[in-house]
Length: 119
Length: 107
Image (tube, rainbow over all chains, first blue to last red; front, side):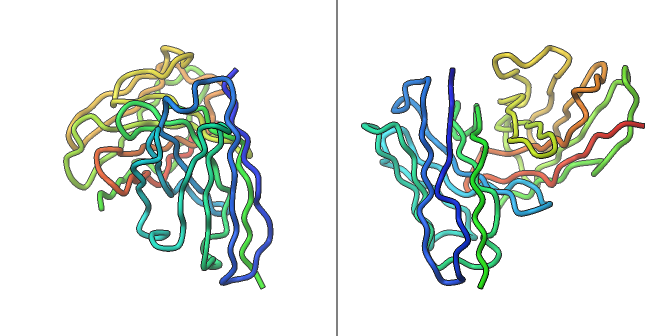
């Protein structure tokens, strides 16, 4: 069974840093690109970042560019999101999702990890 | 950036109804369009990719169509488990963008 499990979400102060992790199982992790998508409380989905299968290409939403860094460790079947200079508007449930054809998301999605930026 | 709009923003329907949701891109995206379903308190589920191809395991009551700027998601016969919020997403160019969602609830 394909499974994605996010972790690392906590309450952090504005300006702080955090690293999210996503542990993948049930598929050949290094065959697929991976995404981070977030959802602020009561709001819609916002794409955050994409990393290619080998980590050689990365893409970001304008709202996080320069502050967030996506990475992966294929030897550990793990995806990461390093989040720096956090703002209140980064408060959201962060999902990782398995990539599909082109730059799409095939799923499945993880259950999400909650990041709260508050003083 | 490519802006995605959806209509309606919400709709009320009955079990057995045929439901159509429209998604429009601010510029042409070929067929690089996906649809997702999200139920309250749950992670999204991928339904359709490439505008009209069903993800593995998705029932055939879901169908998608369109190309360029205008797309539709149709549920042929609405069932209780289909009441949810539906999002479209373009993956033609970066940054990838989602539509605002269409909430489908029970009439």
